[in-house]
Length: 459
Ligand code: NDP
Ligand code: HSE
Figure 1 (tube, rainbow, N blue to C red):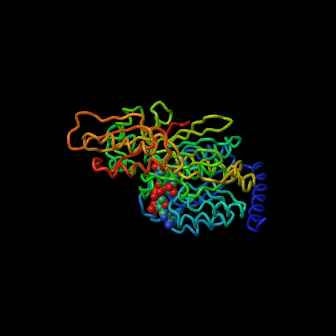
Figure 2 (tube, rainbow, N blue to C red):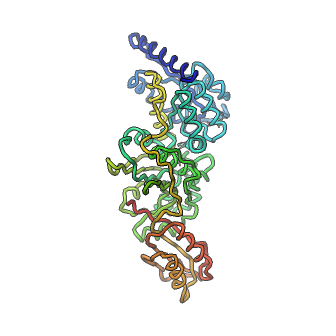
Figure 3 (cartoon, rainbow, N blue to C red):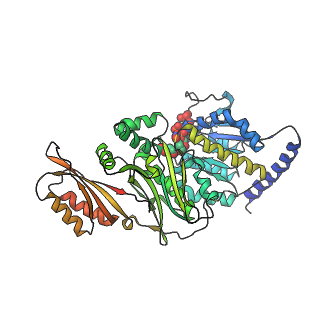
């Protein structure tokens, strides 16, 4: 066992002895928390501890105590009150402080946050993080460090806010081979799409709302361009299939190109539009992608609105399971951090090392199916000049690519030179569809960039 791990094990053993002693006495063992970052989520955690810390203490037999809070600007107004002596701008001193038992990283980003996490792990301290961007970019080396040092890294809050999906995959479903996983994983995008559909809100206004409510990332393009969902889908795919999925292996497309017109036509056809994270086992490979999809309005995921997230997991033994809850925001995310704090406190209490494996090691196939070979039906919206022969030319290109047309809508009574032409297409490989689309876009009768959205059938 490495030196630090030995030291951590010794320390944990001592803690257990101390804990056994304190059980007999009036004093409950205390776990001191070092919080790095006290913005939306950090403030939620401080408030959550103030509300339910005592309850958690009685449930766990361990008192959770805020030992220090590192922020960038100590004078900033916050939605929580922090005792003056607790606040520092020196995260390094806080992490190194021997009185701090657990480090909670809620600052975001992948540079300083990586240092916070690795320094704490090297010191043998358990670390909790909500930082999916960090895990996605550096998870492999961070998990190696956890293994080497015999520590624990908890990351429940990194995926789907308050939904305990990491625990469900790692523990609750560990007896299953995961066949399918479909997730609405970005609260900001789901909020925007819902607002566009329900009240006809403009994209930009809906995004501003999501930012004001604390759902969006500091850099909101992470949300609307699909990268945040890509990070989360990668984490879930790794857990489900037991190998580390690199972000570059995950096809990603965001929601910027989705217009109110697409939402209206999708409804007319019996669908709604959702940004989905998709993980499908196909033969020996796994298809992993993030993109907007037409979801049949009768499907359970079609009814997941606003900031809510949901993950449908299909296991070979359990069948379909649905995990639902708020996917972003201070309180929902704080709930996940508090649950990690409970686990960390119990692991310290019992001296458990390496109890939180990064993956469920029940499959090691390790191969990702390229998106080109993914097969699905498609929705296509074109803006075309209404003249004879246009539809025939488009149909010829699709026919040449062996893509069948399922239905066509060209609404009457449109004013202006061009009219919308909506087509529903049968199953086709992604590469064939994208090539056909390039040819269609070059036709003189096609006026604007075509919009293509994949249709998810959940088979
Ligand atoms: P915020 O931007 O609201 O908060 C970031 C905090 O980190 C601030 O308190 C900031 O200090 C502090 N900070 C930044 N740099 C430093 C530094 N060098 N030293 C000390 N403190 C620093 O982010 P969120 O709370 O929204 O997000 C935090 C993490 O949680 C991110 O990884 C995010 O992806 C993740 N997450 C967010 C969710 C959400 O709904 N918002 C949901 C799930 C996960 P100061 O306040 O002084 O500026
Ligand atoms: N920006 C993220 C979202 C926060 O909107 O889902 C939760 O991870």
